[in-house]
Structure formats: C-alpha cells, structure tokens
Image (cartoon, rainbow, N blue to C red; front, side, top):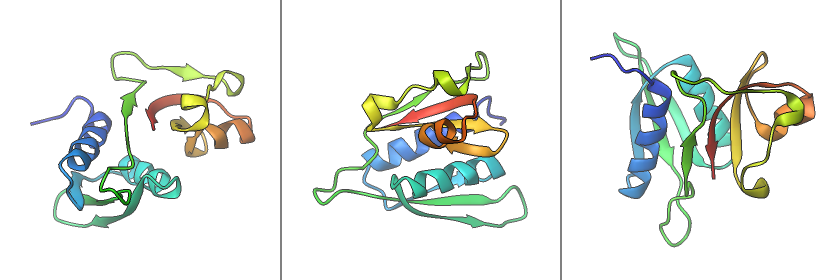
Length: 132
C-alpha cells in the first residue's frame, strides 16, 4: 500500500514509539528521512539512527532518547507543510518555535536545516515540521 505522506508517517512513528517507551523504532528508509534523523540527532531529540540495507528501500532504525524520569524528550510534533498545502518562507519570515525551545526543519537548497541554521545562512525554504 502506498503512503500519501511518508514524512508525516515517520514523525508519527517516532512520537508513538516515544509514548510507548520503546527503545527504537523501524521506519521505511529514504534519503530525506535519513537527513531528518541526522538533524534530530544533531539537535538532541534522538540518541542515534542507523540505515539498514535490505532488498527493498531499506530500513531506518531510530534509537529514541529519554530524560532521567523516563519521559520522551520530544514533547510535540507538528507537520507544517503537507502534500495538499506546501508552506514556503523566506529567510526573514522564519519564526522560532516556542521562543527557541523547539526547532523547525526546513527543506532548502542546501539540504535539511533547522530554523536557526537557515536564519544564520540567510536562506529560506519549505517548512516541513516543528518539533519541541
């Protein structure tokens, strides 16, 4: 069965696995999902990730991160740009998430960047999601 929004599926799998206190979650792989996992690791929202090759598209295994009281570090996820409605912003219009407590992930000409990185590089793009 084909998925209409694989990016939202990845975010939902991570959120649900965190709520269920799983150590890791397996997601059908792609280059864009691997890039998002790299951004999430760099920002401290996940422990690690690994791309496992198989005879199909591959599997992205994401290792989740928890606080000391076993609470998932990702409190909320919001998909901003959807297949039915794309949201593009210029570098001057990028707003911080929860006054800087969260991040926005943008798809730019330089790859996936956080809102802070995009503002520093003075580059706009498509706002994919907000994570806090």
